Length: 530
Image (cartoon, rainbow, N blue to C red):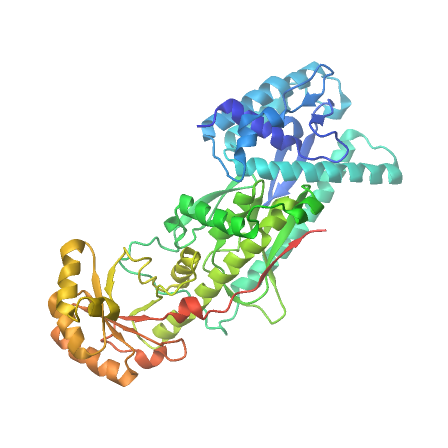
């Protein structure tokens, strides 16, 4: 549990940021000035001094990041303090320090008129309505404050050179007008792009997969609440993201990053430094967007980075655009060395997961367009160390994972049977003795006779492996006449080009290793904004 005091220290560190012209660790002691910015059509007021509170003997606000146990312990992780503790500490700091500054200098023209302390009450009300309850908010505050302070200095120099110094109130009005116009242009551009995407053609054949019945997976229409730039928004939940356990993702992502920087120095990171930068994620080839949780996790593990997805960027959505076009899906904010450290790993996971989802979605579309109602499934033919991503891509695309690992379902292949003396009956009964009633058993069969023996021994699924289409349809029909409750799976050399030949009302599952071995990656790029 993170204490409220630690939360405030983290916020203190966040609010300062590497502002140009400031000595690191020290912020000048001028009275706090309001920062205005707009996001998602709302005008939000934050104050640079919101989280500042420590002063040295000279009256300067100072920070001690080296001795701050909370901030130094963050490392590559994101830790979430309780909303109540975080909000209480921020509110206390504002009321104690910033409020005192307002009351101690009532005639300072830089603060504007405030006869009844209305600004104090307005900020307190904003905090009550919009509690800052996550470290991601602080990371974004760092970048926003740093960027704004730099823009503010440049704007003041430009205005002073052009028109001479302006009164404080007039300067704020000019800044508001300029920023509002800029945000309106960006919002209009985003709306135009979102409209174009919503009207995308179906020339690639992309369609939403049919709803999966009684499989225990969350519906793609369910909602999740997210905090974006201090405001709560609701957007469709990633279809199966709740299946991804955070410890598992963290372990996998950490291994990926260690593989890229095993034990030595990141010289490239040293060259570029740690200034706060913004990078834009672009989708450059059509396909299904999948892998957002892995993309987020990579930059979270790099430390100090925040990923902000566009509102129309939704897991499992198809994006189709003309050749040579591209779509901006997200902005990543953080230290430039950290952005570059996670760039390739994040793009690899996103492009491959999207590739699996795209191929899976097309296979499901073909099946449904031909009237076949069975399951399109993958196999365990996955990339070592990358299985979770590829299996997740199958789910997002609308296909079945088959089984995730050796423990999820018992599958007795030809080698298992031969190792038991060639007796399918003995192999099935031995497996049933230890698996009990809760696990299904599948048997790989080379003929109708083997399938009948397996079903008679108690198998739940029989796999007709490497059958020709005509033989498969005939044997599946004969098998179902004897054992209608046992599922039939077709497998062996089936691809997206040949799968239609295997469709039959007597076949329940068609599995393809090609779904995780023969997919084309979707092209993404991440570009640092100059």
